[in-house]
Each structure stands twice: as C-alpha cells, then as structure tokens.
Length: 395
Ligand SMILES: Cc1ncc(COP(=O)(O)O)c(C=O)c1O
Image 1: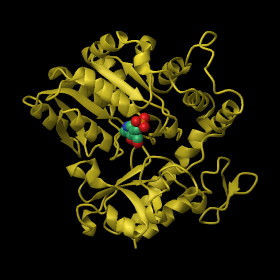
Image 2: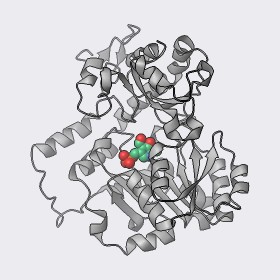
Image 3: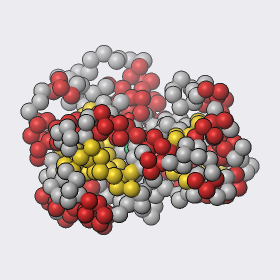
Image 4: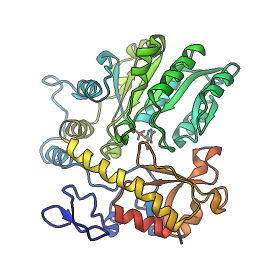
C-alpha cells in the first residue's frame, strides 16, 4: 500500500484503501501469532472465522492507549463497570429497531458460553434442541456434551416439515444461528414470524445467536428474532434469548466479550437470582475495544463490507475457473462461503485434498452429516489473497 492509502491490487487498478484491507501480504499474515495462519506446512488459511484485515484504527489506538497507561482495576466507583450494555441497547435500536431491556443484559466471555448457559437453564438432559443443519460445529458439540438430543432442520430449511416433526420430538429449545453459519442464509422477517408461530405452538424457548448480524449484505436485512417475536407473537418474545458480540464484525475474537439478552422470563428469573461473581467481570481490553468499535468503527466496517461483497461475488467466477462444477451461492451474510464439492468427486471430506494443495479450509463434515462433500471457505481477506487461495485449491 502507498502512503496515501491507495493500492495497486491484483488488476493494477488503483483503489482507495485507507485501512489496508486490499494490500495484505501472505508472508506477513504467516508471521501473526494467532491460530489462523499457523497450520502445518504453512498452508494458505481460509478456515477459522477470523478476518485477515487489520483491526479498525480506533480499536488499535484504544488498546495501545490502555496498554501504555493502566491495565489495573477499573475505577468501579466512578464509572459503571462497563458502558457496553447501554451502548449495545442503543446500537440495537439505531440499527435494527429492537429495544433490548437493559436489566436483562448480561456480559459474558463469549457467545458459545451464552448458548451453553441458556441451554443449561432452559433444558434438561434428554430434551431435544431444534437446530438448522449444517450447523456451527461448537453448537453440535455443546448440545451433544450436555446430553441433549438434536432435531435437525436440514438445508434448504423447510419449516413446515419442522413444525410437523416437532409434534413428537420432545424439543424444548429452537437454537437459531441468525444469520446462519455456514450457509450464509439470512432468515427473512416472514421466516422469523413463521418460526415464532412454530415456537408458540410447540412451547419452545428460542435462543438466537446473532453474532454475524452486522455482516449482512444488501439487499438482505437483518431483523433480530426477538423484534419479530415481539411484533407478531409476544408470548414467544417472553421465551426468547439473544446472544451476540462485536467480535466477528470487528475481528476481535481473541478479546473475549459477548452479551446475552434474556427476553425469556424463565431465563431472566434464573439469571437475576445469581450473584455478579457467577458471570465474572468483563475484560477491560475487550470493553475498551468494543466501545471504540461501536463508537468510531463505522467507516472501517463499511470498507470491510465492500471488500467482503466484492469477494463473495468474485468467488463465483474463481470457482468456475479453478474448481468447475463446485456448487456455491454467495452468502447473504457472513464472510463464509459454503461450497458443495460433491460434483468434484473429492469424497465425504474434501478438506484434506485441499490441504494437500496447500489450503486450509473448514471440513464440511464437522458441521454435521449435511456437510458431507462440502467445505467452508473464509472470504475475509484481500481480493488478491482470495484469488491465490482458490487458484491453489484448483491444484
Ligand atoms: C455463529 C457463531 N457463533 C459463535 C461464534 C464464536 O463466538 P465466541 O468466540 O464469542 O464464542 C462464531 C465464530 O465463528 C460463530 O460463527
């Protein structure tokens, strides 16, 4: 990248690139300490859901400022322990027209922890949890380890069929991943309304992980499940939980911070009765980074969404050239591409084939049986690195 923030890019076309999103260097990426770029053989990394982009300058500056001044106990007496619940509530109103209740917000270390907390209090061992599959692997693992059963809702999602199956399934919770990882599906307002009706009919609590919400590509729009439930089936809003974080949107997964909204009266009653120590105090660095992201990160986010949109479109042509026959539909949201490799005849798990060709992707079968023959590819990199990744996948 030049000093004025422009970049020649793969095509030689000069693009304004003030945040260095288009000028990533693979050797530099390999020198990063995080998990993503540390795979055997120095494979190109397109697996775990971290972005290759540098964090927003506002986040970087705030973290440096803290690290160079004071990382001792915050002044709990003078300031609220964390400004984030209030900021979160305001952000939800402004962006999504949904007003979470402040007294029902709980800060946690991470989203999967929130899912576990909700399932722990809303279900018993042996109960079933309905889940859209293929599914984010930690959901499958969490449900199985907790001794709960899974009612699968296979892609492409058929909610009439789910409605019929739930009659005998013994399900207590519908666990939504909205937007959906790995398919990139954004549930429409109509779909969410339908799911709310189903939840009402079958007495389900609905736990909605909305961590990818800000990464929704127009014309798709994200509508929080709780907002739709409140408008259409209020009894379900009182049985709903929303869990999210700034960590996918702003690439801060290592900082560990998430928020849970207990719209569910049942969950609220349990959590309100627990002491503050049960949840632990939020991490000072995560709070500072999230505050900077939500108050000063908008321009960075707009630039990231532009590159992600370009990449999700470019992948269609890249696959046609390097892996002709692979099935791919650009995701409505997220930076994750769900690729059907069955027409390529690469077996149940194509990921080792791509690993041999020098690229680490997420193996489809880890997302459940519906992931056979698929891989998930992370698009959150520069257009030039994406091209290099897909070219290598072609062998
Ligand atoms: C749908 C979904 N939920 C949760 C997470 C992880 O969140 P956390 O690290 O806060 O548990 C991810 C990460 O990729 C995700 O895709």
